[in-house]
Image 1 (cartoon, rainbow, N blue to C red):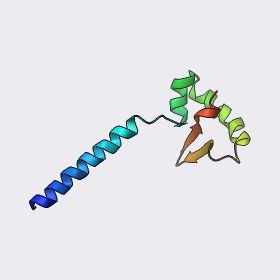
Image 2: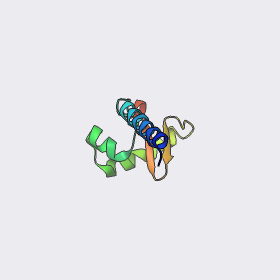
Image 3: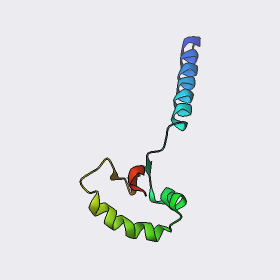
Image 4: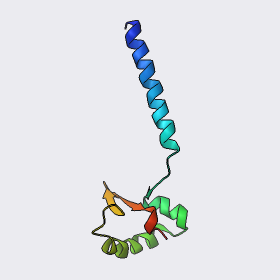
Length: 80
């Protein structure tokens, strides 16, 4: 590898570190059920039963409730 290529790789690594550090300071907006378990103190089964009602109520508002792969993404505004 030449010196320019190594220098470019080091700059990219520093850029990725900066992005990761900045993302760590971002406020969390969406939660999944296991995170809600810790936040609310409810067990997973109770949260899943509540999801049935919440799913119907917010079915037309994907910004507040949507599924990513197999996990629910629940907006913080509808948690409490």
